[in-house]
Length: 416
Image (cartoon, rainbow, N blue to C red; front, side, top):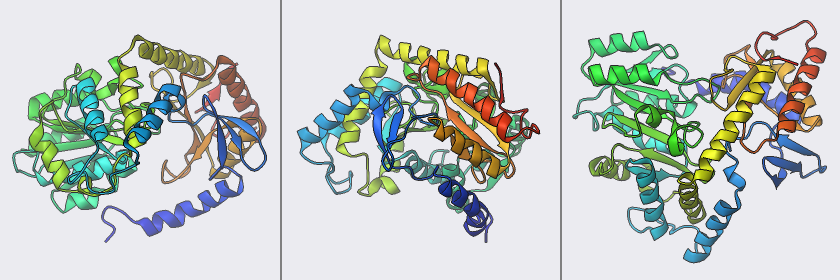
């Protein structure tokens, strides 16, 4: 028991942190949307800027995506077929997956979420169905997303599981030397900041046949030509048959659900295996509104305007990095983590920022290591310069006020 997970222990340790966050008014906020990443609290009308939105390009409120979602529902007259896609499916599902496949030059399948994408594909990889019927040694990066780590038990029923230190290419190469089939499971862009050493991993793939499995929830749309993400950009836009990518379509992409990039276009055998042997067989999928938004987002990704959105995002990242020093500064990614250290101090800081009109998500164990609590921030293309500068000034002022001893000041130092 508890070889891979201990939910009871996790809940026991993190429960107090969640309770404190809830009491501070930072958990379960009920709001009205004001557009452009701004909200109004329903109970008292307090307005604030969301500094922790995953909509890196601001597409979640783009009128064209919203209209496309509404049009799709009205066209079909239904949100779902309410049966398995294997039995009956709307043309909107075919159209959305075809558009994704053509745009990213992959064999794409949509899912209800990125977590379902992991559930639908990771155990299949562990079984050996994608590695010549030989189960690979499944090597998980220690910092791989929770939705990947949560599947270790299922994967362990099919293959040997190994966990290595974060971005430890040397340890991974040693495993490649010792075993004929190895698969590496990691994030492309990590949810708490930083990225995978993709170039080095591709070297191992070429040398040893390493199978690479990436969660690109935070990389798709924000990075790469036409939003193809970190991994596909390093691959020159051409996915290999030794690579699977899962992605969120409701973060930078601005639509709904998730996707699996199963391999190169025409990977019909893999697609059939995914559709017939797991949760993709069931009745839950991206609904008709989400499918309409997916098609509209793909169309926007192919325009010159899209490159301008990416440029605005990078400009805002550079502006923030010039004001606030973090471990992630100058990495070109939209996620920043301001470490505070103590959980109670982190919650207090977040509470004071919200009072001043900025929501910054406090994170703690199990999202981050114990004693390393802090604020997770996401930069967006539709943030204004004034918003970023005002937030940075407040962050410095409140940190100085709440932690005059300098507790946790090395990470997240704010520059004037």
